Length: 395
Image 1 (cartoon, rainbow, N blue to C red):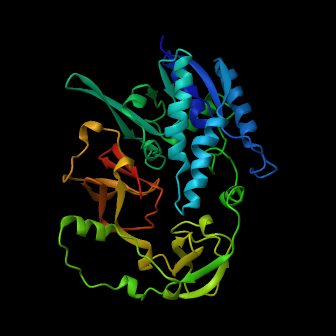
Image 2 (spheres, rainbow, N blue to C red):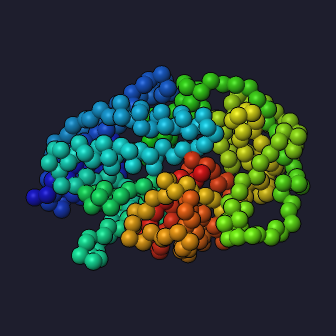
Image 3 (cartoon, one colour):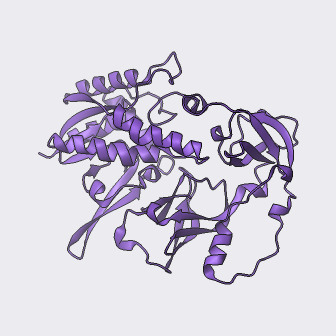
């Protein structure tokens, strides 16, 4: 019997994953990851990790599988939390869920599981794994989940072949409704439990409250840039080279305070991200204001009216070479090569037609249609049909 360690999170998805593996005849062990226990930043009346840990324990008990808790909070602080503060300080917007999978679940946690003699690690992610032989080697594929509304392949976009070889995704073929039905039939305590929102580790916490632990509030101004601003009106430029054109298509707009008028104040540019609408507390405009850029050096937030404001859109993005990651290394393109495929710049965004352009300094991703709120620090992931081929950090 192959041994599988399931990351039991106290949610319905991982509970049903454990049940299905047991039904398939695996020897199953449940492990709960305690990633964070700094109560000063969780919203006071809830202690989510304790509730989750109890639910996970009750599920393990019901299924008759061994259960233990591992405390990964030290590695978590180092690899995720410190990285997040660092990124926000630079005015970038990191994705803690992608990082948590890369650094914690499929690295630290996986190593612990394998040290317990496990053959595999399993999680409750809505995605699937494929495999086939190529030139005498096994190639693993990361495929999107069958439930289009819940597909979580994007969050796993940084996984490697080696990590995939040791991973199982038991619910990838199922719809969320089927998962809940199985949990109810088995009388699992998590059957009706709501999906966890909020950051992958701090449970129910407001991001600005969390960031204020490290990044002190600092008053600055909110500037509204009119859609007619000269920044957005340009003649069709002529390019001396392909690289010039790629740079142009992925260049972000840059703003000065005198590009618009001051319409309000804020408590720190690093608490805001591109495309954000809530939290600006500026009224009286015909259309709502959206953040089109933040300047953490000068502590200024630039906004524009309406979701069609030209400052929100860009046609391309750039990934520095050391941030380009191929899940399918065998399909990686070489310098000066291009690849047509589909890509997304955020979870649940419908896939968009795009072309990858590899250069010696990094990769350009140019979309057929301009994209809203391309955000530095977030991940872009690219796909061929249902398969996620690779990803990178938007720079």
